[in-house]
Image (tube, helix red, strand yellow):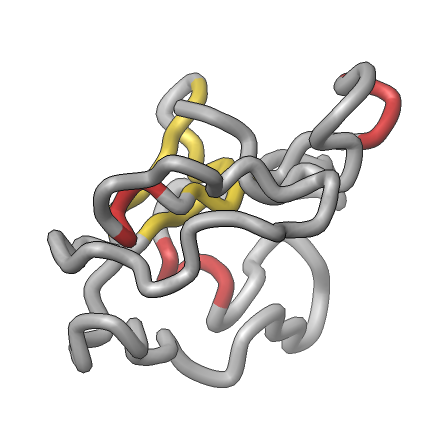
Amino acid sequence: MSGLQRYPATLEDLLRDGRVPGIKRHLRKIFVDPMTGKAEWGLIKAGGRIVGVHSLSAKKPRKQAGFADDMDFSGANTYAEWRFVHAPADAVSGSGASGLGLPP
């Protein structure tokens, strides 16, 4: 594969990126979800590629308001509704420009 920029197909693709020569790691390991205690995540995909993650926890978030402007978590009933999505700044207008917390 060439150095083509595209999203990973699996979380494991972030452990070792085969698109470039040598070893390139975006993550050292698949981290544990602090809400569930498991290394399992809900995946948000576009075109079969992972663009974001969310917890699988059905617990109600303690924090309900007062988030940064680019994080739209207010009113979420579960941690699973807190979505962390990559969206390039030039592809998003207005709130959410950093790509965090965009609604589903």
